[in-house]
Image (cartoon, rainbow, N blue to C red):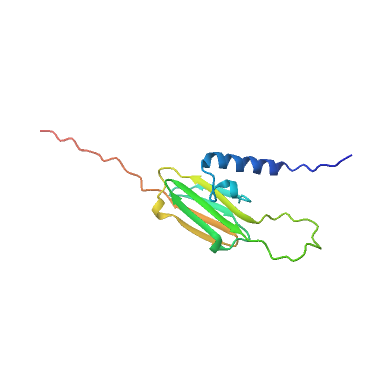
Length: 144
């Protein structure tokens, strides 16, 4: 009898990569097809901004690229492998190394010019301010 290992998360990760690749629409070195892992990202909306929080442990800030183009925020980078000459002594290796790639469509209310990013203790926080709300102008009707 053969024992098979059930890894449901690997199937979900594979599905996510396939969906990202199909929505990307252009294969190539910058596409999701070349991503070797996908960082976990939380997205929240506050009154005056949107915040993306990405877990990037072990990634050097110099290896993180955040860009904004045509309403799409792109997060890409790479976590380098540790230099190991031998694998003896390791019972299991679960940490993934290599490149990552994520894209997020931003709403029209996002102010692309004010985006800022901060990296602290393996967590990248991207703050995207909202555009100032345009208030309707009230027109006074005068009587003659």
